[in-house]
Image: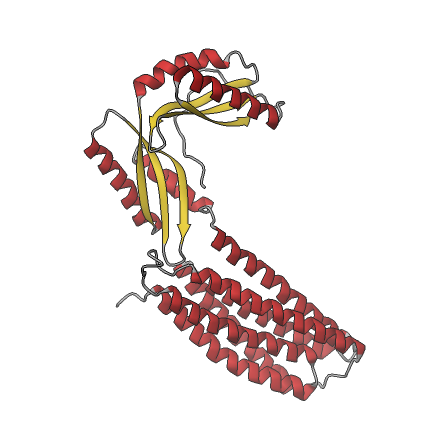
Length: 382
């Protein structure tokens, strides 16, 4: 059986959502008018925003799946993140409208007509909405699509709110203001959802680091290939994710061997993470590192605040040769003092050796021997 493309999952989920929500919107609006329940009418308009949100998903994934062109050589996948943001805006406006209508109902409360048949129909809509939510969550996980997860939460919140409406119908006779109060609650909840989803969409557009689970896989890939990595950057294009990184290799190995190691890392990332990878090779001189490291040990002894170090290496890259070291500081030291000491070391290093020194540091809660050299290192994500 042929595997569905990413956008086809979105089309299927969006089409099911639109069709189901149209039926549910009509039922809720009709019943809400018949029993005079603003809560149910508000819930119906919440369902209407789900229709708009699902249409946005279909259109968004259509444009996101368009092939690369001269202006967009990496494709149009980030339109997915715009789709998430647009859906959140629709939710926010709807929530504001429902809150406003709820306040009006508090000023002029009205009686709700109890009808067991209408309640049964509302329960049926709850079952349908939960089914659509599970479908959207399933496809959202399958393609790692935030827009589908947003749509799933639309459905699930609609189902939960419908259950609340049933409670209002039963209890409104005892407290006539309950209909307006619950409508305001519905509106505020929708606004809250909109803020969460908009933040998620904006965060994706700005660029996010890899989640911890994928970073663990990445570290395992580096370990299996016997390399250390740094300057890891993730480029998220929705339907395509690209990782660029640098690996440090001994300068004594051949160009062919370096190319093979880089290719192995790229292939492992593609196979295990489903992401394209570009690996840049930086070389370091073991003999030169060992020679200068002896001097470095003596230099840092003049700074009693420094309690240890690890990963002292000198390597070359497109930025020129430079040294890299991780420093441990006394836990009582201030951040400003750490920066002053690091700046002093960097100036001293370039003056003495003509090589730039990059320091990374943190405070510790126990003394570490100055000769400690932990070679296990994965650079920060950026």
